[in-house]
Amino acid sequence: MESAYEGLISPMKSHSTKKPAILISRFPFESAWGGEEHHTLILASYLREQGFEVVFFGNCPILMEKFRERGFEVCKVKGGKMIVTPMELLKSFFSFGKIKKNMISAFNELKKKYHIKALYCLSLNEKLFLSPAAVKAGVPVTWVEHQEIRGWLLKSPWRRLYLKNSAAVKDAVKIVPVSSGNSRALASIGVAKENTVQIVNGVDVSAISGLPRKTEKGLLMAANRFISKKGIIDFLESVKILKKEISGLSVLVVGEGEEKDKIREFAAQNLTGIPVQIEPPLLRKNWYESLLSADVFVSCARDSNETFSLNTAEALAAGCKVVVTRCSGIADYLEDGKEAFLAEPASPEDLAAKIRLALTAPESMRKTAHESAKNKFDQNRMLEEYRRLITRAL
Image (cartoon, rainbow, N blue to C red; front, side):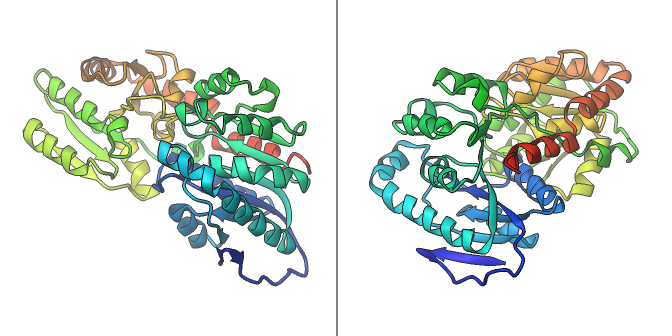
């Protein structure tokens, strides 16, 4: 179901009985599948199960496609790219009036069809240009900051408007920082602590718990987007170091992205003698099976833009021995050497040292990892906390 919005939304018939509706909005700089998108779809499905109509509002091709596939209505809006680069920033000063008009017009048209009870904002554009109209209409707004908060907001001329909108009416706007780093960044620009709500990300621990573990000794696994900042080459560099001293290693890398050819070439040239599988993103069943066979799961992001790492949480739930770089948001909730081993980012040498420790760690560490995931990263807890926050006015 799609309501194609190109200036003015196509005519809509009013429902005879209107369910309370939640708008989920996103205007990305670039559209790609990742943890943010997965999290958003899980949340949308949960809200629908709780009796809400959920509508996607924005121009993100990936999310529009995924929402349509699952039977959600999609309202496509011309809202530009997310204002996170100097070029988009420059454009925004000339186009903000048109973008704002487009967003508000589409929002008002949707109000005729639905009882809009909440707006959930993923990107900067709608936080700046649509939130005030929603607040004025009595609709509570929730902002979530999945991406690392850095120069795109900290040094942006739009920062003042961000602060103004976040605090214009008491409790009208609440912000989920996602990571402790983002919490600190928001505080540094003057966002009041009472305007933020910390909700720890979660994964479906119960779905993994019922499956048998069949560990393949020496299987090292990593999964992320194939781009430089995710550090997959660092992981392969660490395996190159380890292969000189440890026999029986094998490698599984899961993902896709611009570095795919570079990753394949590196493996072919440097990991001869080691079985290496490089796979595209897996179906959920195959993904769980892979995690349950991995001896060690390695999360090798290079910077704190990895604000959580759902893959790592799922690896813990699956009972993997886990190595994760300290810059990942999930590392804030883990004790080095207990539930996982924490490595320095962008350091293949330290990554290799921590993988070595993981390979020789006692098997009891798998149970500790699983219990940690169950207690700290449970998806049911996370979804209910989001539902209560988003629908707080009800």
